Amino acid sequence: MTTPAQIRHALLTNREIALIDLREEAEFALGHPLFAAQIPLRRLEIEAEWRLPRRDVPVVLYDDGDGLVEPAIATLRGLGYTNVQALDGGLAGWRDAGYELFEDVNSYSKAFGELVEHRRHTPSLPAEEVHALIREKADIAILDARRFDEYRTMSIPTGVSAPGAELVLAAKAVAPDPDTTIIVNCAGRTRSIIGAQSLINAGVPNPVFALRNGTIGWTLAGQGLDTGQTRQAPELPLEGADEARLRARNVAYRAGVKRIGLADLAELERDTSRTLYRYDVRQPAAFEAGHIPGFRNAQGGQLVQETDHNAPVRGARIVVADDLGPRADMTASWLAQMGWEVLVLDGGFDGPLETGSDGAPPPRGPEGRYKRPYEGTDNKAAAMQAYLDWEYGLVDQLARDGTHGFHVL
Image (cartoon, rainbow, N blue to C red; front, side, top):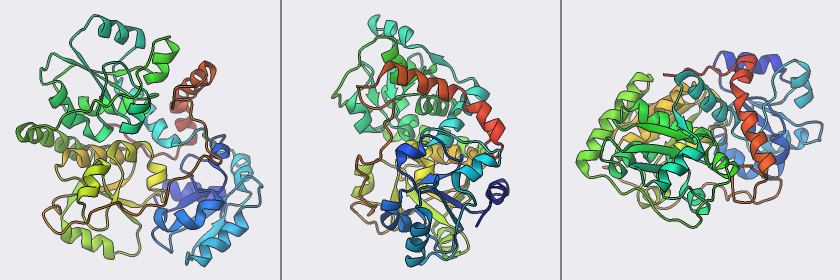
């Protein structure tokens, strides 16, 4: 058994630990420790080897009195995991110890986004004002920081798809005139805040704002969304990419991100005492066309948004790669601020490359899924407002929890 106090100590001292919630996602979203990752028991055999690459990493399992822990321990030990224990008292034990429970999914990434806005006062515009600017045909560019499939489902009128890590590259391509106002949106708040602050951190000369509360705020204001759009930010000419590269590298440097070459990477791979995640942060099509062997694909903005899913071992190392550089540097700058030991790989794309997918487990189906109040077009106004109210309270909850280790540039 591992006690809640021992989990907390591991988090405070940055020791590797994977705290795994074995319930379905909808139950997980009702309340869980800040750095817990969710793998339902029925998916454990499929996902464990992918998400927990080191067999002797400390893994602590819990449920809420559902009888899931013992079969999960047997499954992991059958897969060769040697350091698997139960959380003493399960979720109730965590609660009884007086520790915080966080709702929703990707909670600590969202809490971090709220902390960024709180500390940096990231500028934002309400939906009504942005709607008026569109109607007046003002000199604005709306960049949607979500995945392309989310953008295609529903988007702000005139918006262009520019997923998070692409923003520093996309800004110059979409808004070459520094007088053009750039407005970054997502479905809710986090990727809007992180996206807008990315451009500000990188010193983009344009006025930059987040769309306050994203498409949720837009919908609550009674304004219509487009569906089925396919607009994407064009690729930058090489000279523009060079400028973006310098801007992004400077941000990564300020965040304390380290840079390594292939020889250094090989040394990290030989270190069996630490968990190592390797992510190519480009878009899926670019990844599948050619990537460094051993790297997985996680779009940079999504790696920041869904860090608990992509790197459930808190305290692990993360290496990010990108053929141009800005995507990796901006992604790494945020991961470093979230308390990760993150390194950017310089080079590697001029050698032998692999093609195709990274072999990730098949995606989860609808079973047990948490209905997100910010996805799709059929969300109820009360659920959307409740979600926003929850996000507004995350900064105070982080302070009560006290384990996050975040810092904001």
